[in-house]
Structure formats: structure tokens, C-alpha cells
Image (cartoon, rainbow, N blue to C red; front, side, top):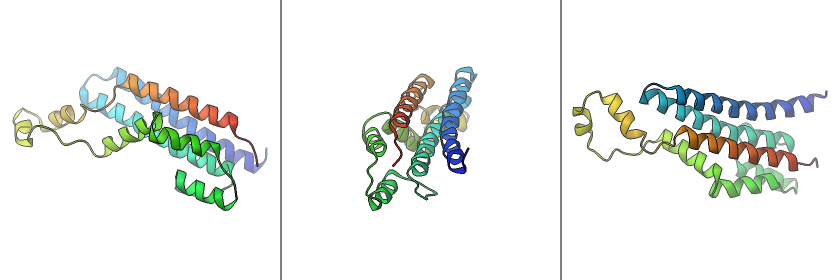
Length: 170
């Protein structure tokens, strides 16, 4: 096996690994006995889906022989344009990033990073008991449940499998 194929295989394995970690986090969420562990597990699953997106971008960069450490759709398109290439995979990712499974994943990831402001004043929340428990309860109202995350995982995996099937060497 050539070194190039080994690197390409590593990139695909890394993407697949992120999907596997997401599955484990969803399984942990189902088994959670309290809200904090449930929320942490769901957020972890979302983080891994977002990681699968970046791992797949790295996979595309490797496929198209583009040197990059922090890939984005825009950066890969710019580098491909310099080579006079067009990537149907990037076009499809752009579509589902605007409306579709990738938009849902990236929106959920953003909300994990910047939780929405609670509707109740913090003083009312704090007077209800343990501040951490109350913050978790209020901050996870927007959080998708593990079934939704599992659905996103499967849909995104199917998309990536379809994109991989259509890739051709230039």
C-alpha cells in the first residue's frame, strides 16, 4: 500500500471514528440517570458530529491534494479554483450547510457553545435551589434529544457515504 493511500485511509477512518464516538455518546445519553449527564452526553454527541464535518473536509483536502490544517468549504473551493477544479462534494456540503442536516448540526454546536439566555432572571433561578442544576435545566431546553441526534448522525453518515461513492481521481 502506498503512503498516499494510507494517508487517505487515515482521513476516512478519522471521519468514521467521529461518527462512532457520536454513537457512543448517544448510547450514554440513553443510560443517563440525571439531567446533567444526559445534557453532557447529548452535547458530546453534537461535538463529534461537528468533528465529523471537519474530518470529512480534511478527507476532501487529502483527496484533492490540498495542504490545509484547518479546512473550510470556502478555503477548499478557493484552492480548487486555483487548480481549475470543481468539487461536487463541496457543492453538496454547501447546500446541506445552509438547509439540511449539516445546518442542524452546526446550529446545535453553536448553541452548545453559546447557550441561550434564560428567560427567567438569574436571581429567580438561583433561589430555586442548586444553581448548577437550574442552569442545566434552563440551558438544555433547546437541546435536541438523543433520538434527533441519532437521526442527524445517520443522515450525515449516509450523505458522506454517497459523496465518497461519487468521488473520482483527477
